[in-house]
Amino acid sequence: MSNDCKVETALDILVGKWKPVILYHILSNGILRFSELQRLIPDITKKMLTSQLRELEYHDIINRKIYAQIPPKVEYSMTEYGKGLMPLLESMHNWGLAHIEHLNEIYGEEEAK
Amino acid sequence: MSNDCKVETALDILVGKWKPVILYHILSNGILRFSELQRLIPDITKKMLTSQLRELEYHDIINRKIYAQIPPKVEYSMTEYGKGLMPLLESMHNWGLAHIEHLNEIYGEEEAK
DNA sequence: CGGAATCCTAATGGATACTG
DNA sequence: CAGTATCCATTAGGATTCCG
Image (cartoon, rainbow over all chains, first blue to last red):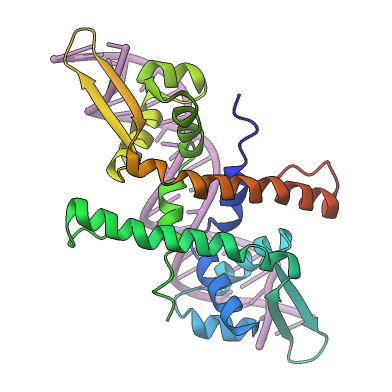
């Protein structure tokens, strides 16, 4: 059996068209409002931004701080626990970087995939 | 810009409902025939097994060796390059394991997600 | 401002049957 | 045995509108 393989658990947290980008911006900026994330990721819709943030929040990767005021203000930041993801993200980034090189060697520069 | 973030590149290789399981079995067994993989992963269809194997092959993670005989025989194994994925897979596995613990602490044992 | 609700499209995954 | 080919179901993602 392979039920002791938890690679997929880690994948779950990162999979989603926008999650890596969102994490990238929050990690770079520390704290970001909903509208700031929208500005930083122009092509994302509110619905997508909301759903991806909620999933990350569910997994305790990011924090959601609501200010009870009008107009509303909501801030997102990494949780302490979520910061523990950073080494893994870096490993993935580095491997990804090397892999692009590798694909170029095999298939040439054209193929982006 | 966040275009220098290549986390997604790494994700691409692993995303796909069956890829982690397939890699797990090939890594555990060294060399496996198509039919052996089918036995080890009972719920997968031929179509899915084929497509996932082809994607891994495209990325030079696994090798496909065809024996020109009747009945056909095809063996799959990790490439040398593909073995370089192992540390990353282990990191992800370990993080995933710890994350399940963490979720249990937050939400209790019931929630599997 | 930061969403929720609704509807729609595209991509992924699966069942089944056929083939060299 | 190791696949294709077709067709169908499910899911992810997106556009738009509305709301406190």
